[in-house]
Image 1: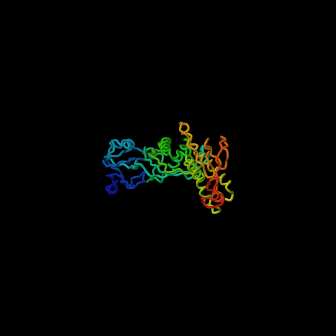
Image 2: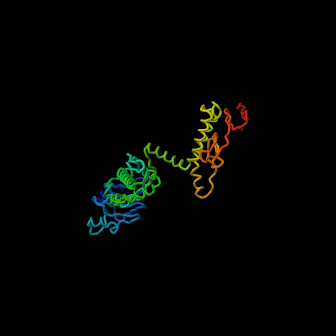
Image 3: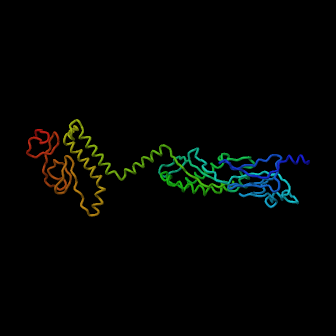
Length: 365
């Protein structure tokens, strides 16, 4: 080789990679046909980087973060392959790959197709889920052998098609094997992610990666199941409030009857005073049933039960406290003789036995 040919060769003195991207995993240092690595060249490997030297298709020497003066002791495998009696004292040709070992964060995942879940409350239902995860290269040599090969540059998008199915498979297994009800899935997101990271560890190690974290942002159900969940939640809220709800409904019905333009009172409903008394009894029974739960603890504790409150058209027996019709002459419970009350047929107001005219509306009695 002449002096002119030697001068044309480019001898590398400083080898380094300044990574300005957020998604590059592997970068092959650009070497031209005439580029050679000479003795005492400086190799710079920054934090969260690994440098791999490849000679004739074989991974030889691996460099952790640091600054190196390349010599025989730094690249022993390449020196041995060259079988140089004087060691690494002349230029050599090799490919240099930088592998990024920092965490690749914010990688999105989601179920393209619904996952079938056997639920004890709703039967077989289909669910969807999505979230984010992060990973990093844990074994650069194995990662090169199993995944990226000799690509000049390798990014996170090139790896997504291989990693996402692994994440989704682990998620499906974790949800199915947990046998947790659909109502309780939201309270177990953290447990699911811990299980997914643990069960997928061997799969990621096989290609030199490590799943660092995973977040389940949401698990959604079909519209019919979500509607059923909403109804069940409403019933749960109302379960302890049925007494109040019944009283409210009875009060509303009485108010609507009082506003009826046909007579301005219960008798004005078109069924007469007797029907009005019947409606009053129905409401009384409803109110009494709603109060049973409140009265029972008092009775068990020995406290006297409160006296029943009569409604329109009824009265309380002075002997046994039974709620009976206002027109009853004898109590059907204890047989006590009752004082028969009179009511105005027009407005329903109670009047004395000798009254000839209603003191409220003037109706002749």
